[in-house]
Length: 452
Image 1: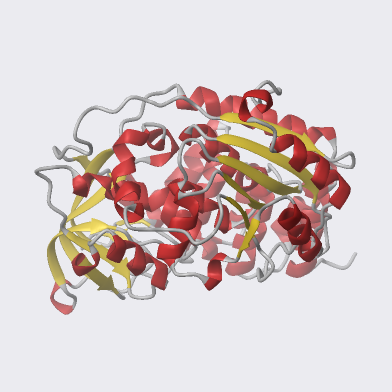
Image 2: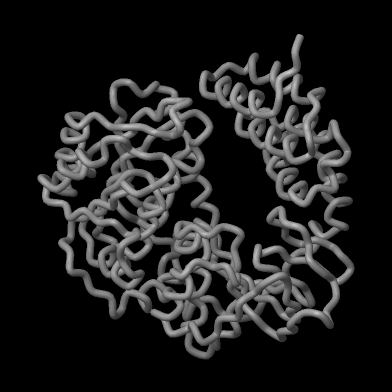
């Protein structure tokens, strides 16, 4: 029987996952173990198997070739596998391989800093109001999974987490957000090669704040990183140097210009050496304590105004990924319903902030533009058109989680994203209009609908 190559294995595993066929996933995983694959190919196959819920097979496929253990992406990929494995013996095997690859750096933990994150202890705010409607063709299992994930997330939010600051001492840092020690111990990895461990050949900085990310998207900046800056606006605290990648997109510098922190930016290239590297520990549970993280968003929005109305639709017509094929028709419908059509990529960040901070309703298909709800007032309603496909649950449900955390009212229309169509999808206009009219009902009425 002819052995499948890497590309076919990836396509077939994705297809088996989309079809909810565990037997085919298992068969293909076993075939990947003995296939002739480069370390890079094995790492990508392992990622697909993790997404299919087979962390055990992902590890077997990865570890079949010892060369994968020395690949720069091994620490990152093995961590993903570790989160998907429950067997204790297998977990110990993976942890031992990670420890060897990272020179023990995975065991180095940041130390807490005695710097107040907020002016006074913040309490968790009221959680948001979340509901979902699915079009008739969406399988019930997708809807059930949404409700399950929201229930799990609500339980997680009950566990208190106060935003705080932590510190690593005497470490290197690069433009990818990787952190390592002079002895070669890798503390944080994003899958890139480590450049140097020579302090004399790189810039040395005494104290700096970590704002580097391996990802360049605006979602991670606004949701994952920006809340961590709020401590700099507490009376008595002073902002240190702020480390950004030398390849950071323009909007990151624009953000810091709006809150008058741009003069603190230090561009990080191959490596810098930092004696005291400060990091913020916030996360979704920290955002739930909105008063603690709000200062940075309030500061940025202070001088932002909007020339648009209070009902906005954030278009993705220029997106290269996950295209809605009938978005022009959707925009025409939304316009008839009183929405201004916004293309965020055509506006300055200040204009984007002004639009979101003055909005009463923010609608749009799933995409990074909806991350601007971080600037939205508590009274704002968020409406998402959500394409759904097997294996994409975690990311597709993020805006529901964010609205739940922020205390916003959220309504979603779940539609099918067909497998094997290069991520293209569309929404039935009649179903969308019916959904929109219901979602735009007075809030007191819509809150009576079933919650997730």
